[in-house]
Image 1: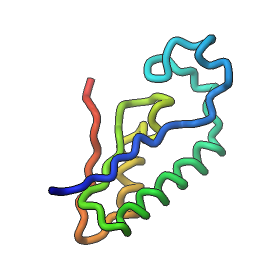
Image 2 (image 1 turned 30 degrees about the horizontal axis):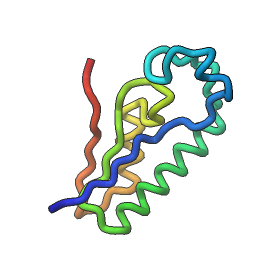
Image 3 (image 1 turned 45 degrees about the vertical axis):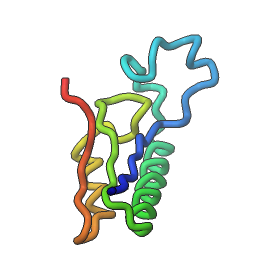
Image 4 (image 1 turned 120 degrees about the vertical axis):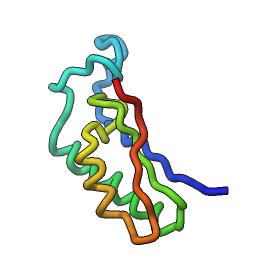
Length: 101
């Protein structure tokens, strides 16, 4: 049996009234809700968590790649994969998951 550490990498600073004002976090989230400074810090925090998973000895580390959404901070595959290189060791393979549209 192999164990994978999977991280959705969600953006966690949505407004309190989000459910009343917006249809979905996955489909049509306005760019104006994103704070680049918070996003930068959060992304690095998530990479730290992925590094920790690698240090713990997980067989694989995976992040979601659903496209641009508030449900995943890993919205750009190139960015996610470059972050994964930061944590990949010679004994680990990196992979992304998601669906293509």
